[in-house]
Amino acid sequence: MVVVGIGMRMSGHAPGQNVTAGQFELPAGAKIEDTQVAGNNLVITVKTPRGTAVYIFNANDGHLVGRIAPKAQ
Image (cartoon, rainbow, N blue to C red; front, side):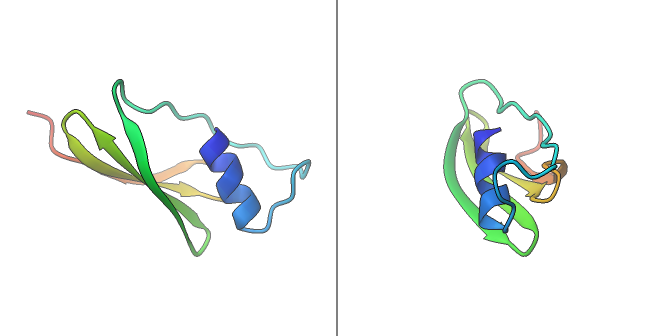
């Protein structure tokens, strides 16, 4: 939630605006490596026990747009 909130501020949404952010939990043992704003999206690179994953969130409402991650074995 904090990361989505930061992304919302970086995309021009001020605190207190009527925007409802989604909730997202990182996988157990995951660590955020990098965050970037790309257009209207917040892109988060996460190191997980299975490898590196990329999560893309819509900065307007906080919903998960997409995920690129190692295939489950």
